[in-house]
Image: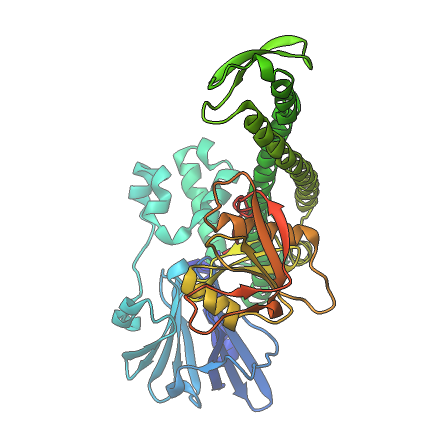
Length: 523
């Protein structure tokens, strides 16, 4: 109810008693959705903080406030030096205004996510706090009083339409009625209960912080679970606002972090299962070397130019159908299979290493998700997010490269040939690690150097996979990727875009893929 008419009416009355005779010393903003007003009267100071975000709007009254030297913008210049004459709430509306000397008026329109502050000079609107709400320049603060009143005859015809008959009530008074048996009462009893409630709303004795449906609320009525009670609206707001915003931060960021970790965990588990299926297939399939051995053992039994032949497999003690190529001799086929065996062993080793890393990632994400689910407060969540910022891939529209990050290291991938030149020549340090798919066109890839740290093997492998993925070898089962410190990469004069000469290179054999494709990007 912090933006309910009945609360605003009490708040305006208290402000009127406190602010009369004060002079506005400054009006400024140093946060996008926050307006600060500083008042002074002799030795006394008074501050109003107006918070108007897309999800929350309220007022707060800090005891002191230190203005930042940077990112602070002065607003409402015609008000500075003006004296407060009156603070008045509009009748049956969610707004109030402060009348100043020299025919200045400041309107506080507290309409949820459409809240705004409007300055009037000689009754003409001249400045808005939220300029995006341009229609507020058409508001006339002198014409905003509403004539809502509860008609008994209309109520007796449709008591369930109480919220339509008196729109300024809001949801908490209606919940208060339901908690007190409104739905099961006779109509006269319902009317009597409503009248008692309205008397409390018009002359509240307490301002409650309550918990209703797991949300912190400010109420003039004891609804839900009462947490604390205050004697005046300013004290109630000062207690409510920081706690609500902390709760809002927790709910919003907890949900986002939980969704993000769950998506990363699901992606990691899916990839782990895919790797396991590949390993299972490899272990249960027939190795190329065994097929080559069978061919070599049966050379005299293979007719020239055969496309397939049934041969005795002494490994499995059975007859096998083996496919051949009519354009090559059986010896050449066996030689080709022996070469594939070498690559197959390398691929198996890479698969097993990748499976181990992915299993460790699944375990880490599972533990993080369990830890997140134990958190209950905003400070705990802030600390968690600070310690466990998720790995992310961020697209940089205005830069010649894509940016990925893992284990604290940034990996830059050139977007095209010209971008490769810019990346390598203008955005790298001599100690950065430079990578490129060997002997084919592709993106330049750079791992940014960190002083005192060596490049971890998993980081180099991830960057190499990106280099292979963003190259003409993208669809190969394995791709050789060269890497070297950037200081050993130079561009010859007159060379085509993206062309460089590399010295002292090392080569890594990897499977072309984007290892970041299952990660969830933070906005």
